Length: 193
Length: 102
Image (cartoon, rainbow over all chains, first blue to last red; front, top):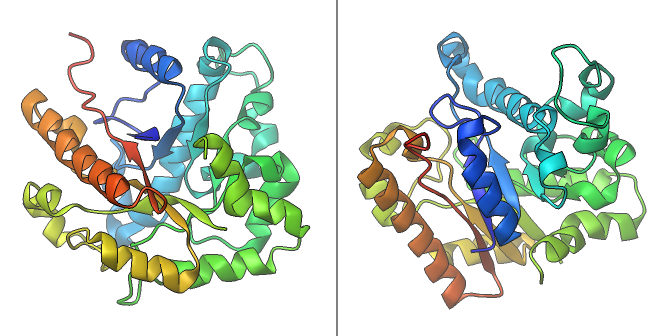
């Protein structure tokens, strides 16, 4: 196995809670990446109407889970943690200045933004080139991974997200050498290929 | 070269353990994982490597034995795909994270 996947919450519990300390210890020993992927959340019932849970609760739960990991100081305890966020991290990169607020006594030593910039963000969504560009301008090409969420297509096709994601990557206006990092070079490094 | 790090599959044995998955609304890809079918799709779009993962199964809402069995079925199927096509499939493991406070 080349990494570990965790849902954004584990039956309603978030993985920054103290009871999951043995998991973080083991992950650090293994030295493999952690992919945090959305799951149904405790507050879900209000989001089920119009199937909004799958559309927007899941990226929101990524925002919550990743923020809690940052604020809990997990990166201070495990500075080599390789953390992968689904769907460009939900709202994180849109709201970095807000996420830097100190209310609520974050346990992390540095400004939260410092840790958010250590996270890897995948392009699954589907999301548009402008959003990938925002991620590129904010965290740089080194922190972005190509992802397309196969086989969760729509419209009766399970491969629909590939043409959508590839089209947006093609339209993304950044140097080709930077694009290659997103397509494969970052993943090669992460998985030791 | 393209590596898809957000890439899911549903092994047949795993789906058999999850009757509720048959009623999912999330698209059409919910049939048993067939590596050769996946490779055809990947080849069609120029995807060199897919990093397999699956977040389903309500593993954390299961009892200890079932959580363990679901993880084992999933991880074994992904490990098998990697063993057969080491240059095309990598995989993220699931862990049975239940009863952590005991």
